[in-house]
Length: 155
Image 1: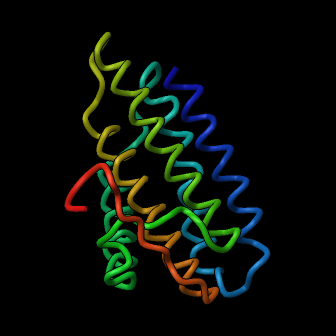
Image 2: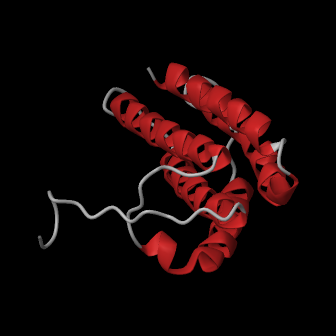
């Protein structure tokens, strides 16, 4: 159920904030995630209620993604194991919850019309959580562990 998934996402974001809050070095990431949390709740009510995610929200998230993707360098161009600092793993959990919300939204879209902006928002949100997780590990001195899939690509 989409609303249950997005509620879980918003709750996981709150949990992530409690971890980020404890580390001064992660203050910038904390300030971004604080702004993301109400957006996740806006996405929650945007299917049965009035659409509350805006193009301005998308543009802001894109700017966050672009900034942190540039900082992440090569680390964001590969699959990495979701590990490291507690804040990074909390951000990875939020990334996973955003992807689950996207999948739940897809199921809803098979039964009714769903605004495209919600798909864009949730997909971008997952990507933002990924680059923030990479940055959290970098700021706390933890190296990413690349994941080389045996299922895809060359062996």
